[in-house]
Image (cartoon, rainbow, N blue to C red):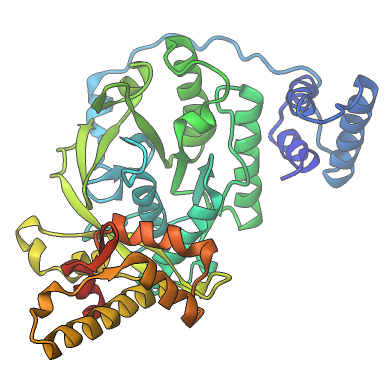
Length: 431
């Protein structure tokens, strides 16, 4: 959303012209070259005139209103007891409405996959791995990086679950947000409010901040004051405003997988906290804090590969993943595990097929000579020459594809020879 639309939204929320100028001044610093003070003042005046024309009878604050300090008062316990209500769940037993939650883990552990999975379920109303979504509604995803990867994961979720996300109320930010800065935090809030107004006043059920580091701004996340500023802006401008769930995606602390990075004020402010730990292909989500309810049992997932409905420029199929919950006692029988290990790209499959064919021919020649066919070996250079001759791969992709096969244990290289592994043979059989 451009600065003019954002400023108009701020004026509709009774933000004063002085505050608007401060916010636009911060935005202006990123321009190259920045607007002069005169040009900035002219822009604000133009926006104010447009606001007055579009909202006849409304007034514009010049200075911010300073409300008097509220009177300090007590309530009798009977008022609290008679007003008690059941927990207002977003996802039963996992995330509450009107709460601040956090999910932390090491890089590439699956925490963003989990956040996307949660967001898609909330927006569509689909149960989250057996846990019902109680407050289906819009989700705003404040993304700090990896926008192409985010698109692929959303598409994989859509393909796997059969939902058309074009009709789902999921909104992805176009850039990161500096939420320790009041002006930027207000712009985020104003952008969400504009979409709320455009969609008939349907307020968000969930706001995801992925990751804290990318959306914290230049402040120090280890400093108590600056962490409290971050929390207060989220509380006042996002959580309390819509009484929704705000989920923060964060990294682990230095040298510890068991706690989130940064100042401890963050943990103190949380209503729920979850650790995401990856071991091989297994992901475990464990509750570290649940303020007003019992902590749920750990949940285990595997990465389940999903073929996307497009190919790359060489015609190779493209894949992403979704999370598949599983019972550890049934691991060996799960097709998802097998699928994860044996999905092949087109060039990978053809290299394995070629090597299998060359090995078969060598074994047949040994049999004819009365020798042990298990002694058959193919040199890597001969495999490369045959593949080049077939024309499905060239020097540009050869080394990268061979390395990928070796890393996946589908191919074994014992210079100068190369062998198809048992896992590679299984992959060919699955294909």
